[in-house]
Image: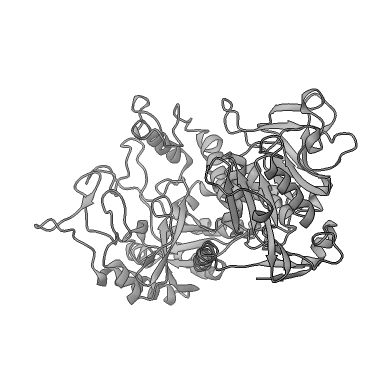
Length: 623
């Protein structure tokens, strides 16, 4: 695992000098201009421009967006772009992003104003997506290059790109090819036009020719600089996610507000407890609420000491630390049933300092409403007057405090302010419990909890609950009730195939479900060939999106067939193959993730409220 660097506004003078840029207008008698650290994004509603705008906003970089489709939009003229502050010329934007090299009608005064502005203040322009032709420094793709699909192409970062704004990459940029029937990427590949000052940063082989064509390159002309992008993309595609940070670094010269990192944290829930197992005949989980009471025989999944050794070896090989959410009663109950012996807990406790630990409550009790499990799906029990029966404040506090004491007695290195409730219970869960347990907040305050895990799939926005702030977690589609690959595939088939194919019919009832199957997966190969690549791509997409939210799995997934590791390996190996050692993944614990999310929200609010001002004058930056 690699550590990361944060993109910040440092060494401004050196960056400007390295880029060979003037600091402002070429007028010897004029004071050096003030360049505001804000980006102008001119949008036509296309996915490429929107993707760059989203990247800037996610990083916390101030943006002014002008929508060309809006009849009431401001006119882009000299007064919109620049003015004077305290007698000093001011460029109001440090960079300009356009849908293409010229999205205005022929002879547009707005494009003339932009070109004059860029020349006067050395402001770079990004052409979010345009086609190859001499006007952007390239030969026409028709005849000299290629225009068409680049699905599955492995592009490369050139030496110029690696020594410049794209130096965080390891050298290759694979383009997605997720479906053989859907075109995902279209591009123009061409070489620089004769005499053009054009430097390719990312290129790919031109089909049928011995040459390579530019996908991203810099065109210098008429005192202006353009970053010319000749492939179409959206903000979620891997190829854009890989290049997004370099596009921002290029347009800002590395001097901008906001930050970007690649995060990956994995929480393993239910440690010391045993997870109920999926029954491939009943298509439910005996012992859990999806099976009618008394149906089937529970056959729990629980790690053994060899699984701890495997986790330790895996962590060491990946330079990565797992976060273990533990239930102390799982060990207490096991000892009661086995003459005082619990080799699993003994092994974990012996190696306790090599993991991070999170309180997951003592018994993994459901802490929301009192569940009526005599029906499937379960419902909240009610009093005769129809009011909901809630788990009490004292019961919740006891679950938290008892587990904390157990962990402290075992010497676990805890951060006592962190908590993951069983199934994220206590928080609202649709449709049965559309509101939080009103006793949850007071119990969290009683026990000093400040960071509470939530399920990002149903509660994605960080919010306050009593003394705690939620930390949304991404659920991995590696099921809690599967210790073997065949069980995972069987349940996956049940959930995501049609009723006619023996499935649950969820996809028929919810056509928007993205993981639906056209046919059941092969029990022998379906996990490795379908589920692992899909889950790897989803999780890696989160990692590449400057998103610190953790992912969560369960201890059952580290037992028996150890089905979680192929996905985790896919994410970390995929990342290492794409990024240089100078841009590693960040592996934070839950409290630190919560703080990072809080800081981002505060920064975003300050930027949106106009409370942030930043600019550079020469080699000085003022924030």
